[in-house]
Length: 63
Image 1 (cartoon, rainbow, N blue to C red):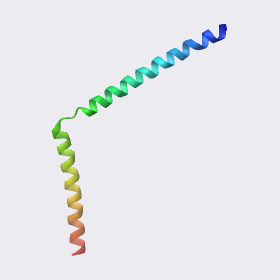
Image 2: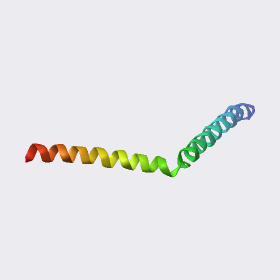
Image 3: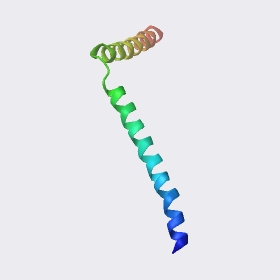
Image 4: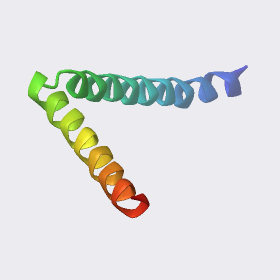
């Protein structure tokens, strides 16, 4: 029984460390989620621009 008491302490420390890491990850996710509207506008613009450029090049090659 004495051995069980010793093994519980490191386990609790491990649980605390895991909980801290989880809180950290949740905070990072929250920070990432709070992007301004123009960030998404910029990403969408870049995607549309690249797809349009590739489409233009494909059309130039075909016709």
